[in-house]
Length: 214
Image (cartoon, rainbow, N blue to C red; front, side, top):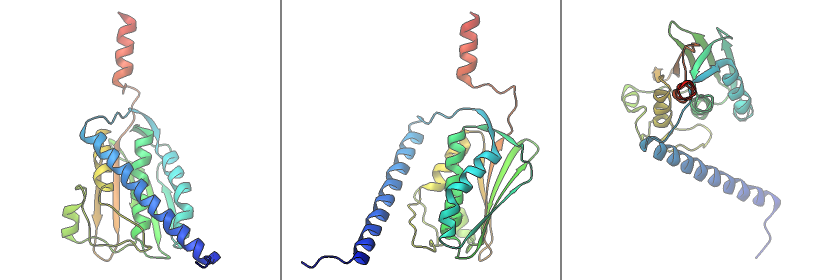
């Protein structure tokens, strides 16, 4: 058998890497589903500076977006906004939303991440210039194993679990995820989280304090 050329070797290696990534994504999503369905997902209630979360996600996805010549623009309307939630869970939700924005956006487009303080919530919006969603597709959002009409623009993969998972995660933190979209005019996915208050105390902390006093 003839030896593979360097170009063919790189091509095969790339396909193997993509397959491994797809399998890892599926396994991680299924583990998350099992954890949610068994009520085993334990999320903390701590002060989380939203700008720090967004800036970290930006660093993680800047290079990925650049491969499609997509620009990520960040707009912090309130740099000091503090949400009540679980830092790791917030990052997981933002990872999914920003990943999807890049995945479904056309080459050489713009993805905007906005943070803001609302009356009783901290808001984050991810705005893309992708194909948008039809009314029918919007009714399917956040349902398990949902496949929507838009297709990834760079041969990325999707398994229909991501939005369902992050919707449950956001709800577990007292927040919510929702979408506003116009077909052929892009989509805006929004995350709302409770505002942090010093009076908020995690149940385990309150329990420990009670035990210490007794």
